[in-house]
Image 1 (cartoon, one colour):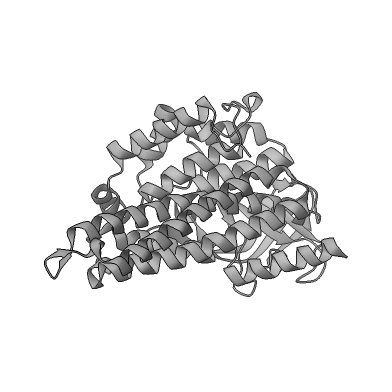
Image 2 (tube, one colour):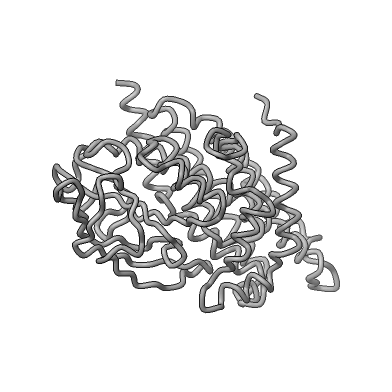
Amino acid sequence: MDFSFTDEQSMLRDTVASYLADHYDFDTRRTAIKSASGWRPEVWKAFAEELGILGAAFPEDLGGLGGGPIDNMVVMEEFGKALVVEPYLGTVVIGGGFLKHAAPAGAEEIIGKIIAGEVTIAFAYAEPQGRYNLANLVTTARKDGAGYILNGHKAVVIGAPWATHLIVTARTGGGQRDAGGVSVFLVDKTAGGVVTRDYPTVDGRRASEVFFENVSVPAEALIGAEGDALPLIEQVVDEAIAATCAEACGVLRRLHEGTLEYTKQRKQFGQPIASFQVLQHRMVDMFIQLEQAISMTYMAHIKLGEPAAERAKSLSAAKVQIGRACKFVGQNAIQLHGGMGMTDEMAIGHYFKRATLIEGEFGSVDHHLRRYETLSLDAAA
């Protein structure tokens, strides 16, 4: 199978890598995440105006550059190498995914503002009791005239402190865990009744607990069909998993490269520890995990266009490999650096924290093993 990138995708990679090398070094990032805002809006504007990458994955008839998931993969891998915290995943991959697939009223205008860097989106889907079940919802959207009234609590909404809009999953019918009765809404974060409690995450990003207290939204806020949005949510989350896997590949590459460089410099018994055969074997195992993660990520992106069950199986298989690789490569990188690997001054600890959180994003290894098994048994039946 051919995994070659097009000239346009290679140019996109080079453009992003060059910009990040000049404007997103480790010390600059560390200063930014410790600031009051936790990010740099000027960098987001540069992504839109100087690089044009916020439109890379959107079709040309919506003002984009005509790319797709592979373009997101290229961008996210480079973002992983630099530990970029700006909300590309929530805004372009997830927000853009819902708007592209469902094409609700006003979608073209919102996408135009995303591409211009004027709109940022956070995905409010997780609830305290929900674990990884996308249908386990107690947040409700009650019909009120032509619109809806939202009530509920969403947990760990990544990027919400920076968002202008929230994409919210809510129950318009059915029981708490039913596949039917699930709907999706695009909510202006400044709407009355939206209350947030913001906090930093361990990997340097920002998140919020979001509370909806009788939030009134118009009928146009509904994305997709009322009560029948679960397949759409699963599709967009699978696309988000693929993009997160790509980011993980960038993180894993830096963990491996940083460890290899360190072991060439660190000496014991008068020689670099990289010369010790047992450590050479360990670093080869880390490299194998990295290469397997890259291959599974490529395959997952190729499978995004397959029927739902086949797509879901491929994404779960990729997420299992990514989760295992993040754990193995991350823990070994820290072990080979010793205690200093966890200090705030060393980049390796920051990459380890991001890798650790990626393990559980959109489903743990155990969750995706169960999902893969269920889908395989259903197919066999």
